Length: 325
Ligand SMILES: Nc1nc2c(ncn2[C@@H]2O[C@H](COP(=O)(O)OP(=O)(O)OP(=O)(O)O)[C@@H](O)[C@H]2O)c(=O)[nH]1
Ligand SMILES: C[S@@+](CC[C@H](N)C(=O)[O-])C[C@H]1O[C@@H](n2cnc3c(N)ncnc32)[C@H](O)[C@@H]1O
Ligand code: SF4
Ligand code: SF4
Image (tube, rainbow, N blue to C red; front, side, top):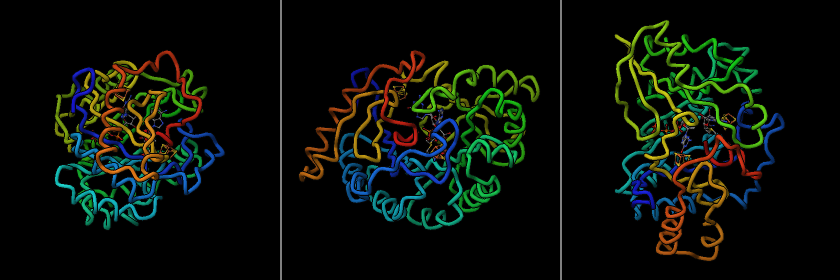
């Protein structure tokens, strides 16, 4: 359906958990975030109910995210049920990749089409510093599993941070020459409790693009499957593409197509929105498909025209891993 600004809303990002096996510096505090109690998180059956109602109001694409979606038990079963909803034509996953060797095959068989994997550095020690817990080689095992299982196009999400990984822009871009990977440079957003950490580390995608063209030459525009906010380009002879997600500098809100379902069961009409529409309460009081449909329409009508992240983050309660990136 169309929202109040004539934008077609057809993409639901579903955060299936607020938990994660990593603690990335820009996403979570070192000690993690107090995990929600199991009973406060939507059950897989409740998530499926919401997705069925969302399909009724025009949602065609589902992306599972988190936290780390692969730590949620039973995800393949949920994917299988969603793949049976005729109106849904794209089921994707955003993941840190570490558990893909364990669950990739089952997810593919269940109907998962493709994965976006987060990777900010090619240096093992730096990877450990950024994620505080992880081993780089495990992500590579996940990337290789995704390619082997044809969970394609495989996109790589790289958050660029001044003084942290900006010296690797060229190496990350070069990956697309050697492998069929779609590397997207994401602008660091001042979100959640990591807001103070972000100060001084933001780099615009314009600057990233300049660095790439200076060292690797001009690129051609190239469309990649997906309906997210990236603009994509290709280096001559490359197997993959290079994308830019200009979340701050040139926000793509005018073409926004999405709604978010938090793991706690609220609809968040914008990444930035402070107001959420509770679905868990109504679901647990027996709300049926029609009532859920009405609540979805309400949330779509609440969508703001654009974010105001340049003015700072105002939600004191939520961090990125709880909202679903
Ligand atoms: N400002 C803003 N940033 C977003 C939004 N959605 C995604 N992003 C950013 O884009 C990054 C990549 O998103 P992904 O989860 O990989 O999904 P996507 O790019 O929408 O997906 P496809 O294009 O379908 O592959 C996220 O990590 C966020 O940083 C949004 O609605 N607003
Ligand atoms: C919150 S994570 C959830 C899915 C999964 N755990 C992962 O890392 O891909 C989704 C995406 O949000 C991005 N992200 C998290 N915090 C961010 C921030 N402050 N600015 C920009 N992107 C951020 C991550 O890099 C990741 O690509
Ligand atoms: S970005 Fe993803 S992997 Fe990193 S801490 Fe956040 S949820 Fe976990
Ligand atoms: S910030 Fe809000 S309006 Fe802008 S693209 Fe993201 S969800 Fe849509």
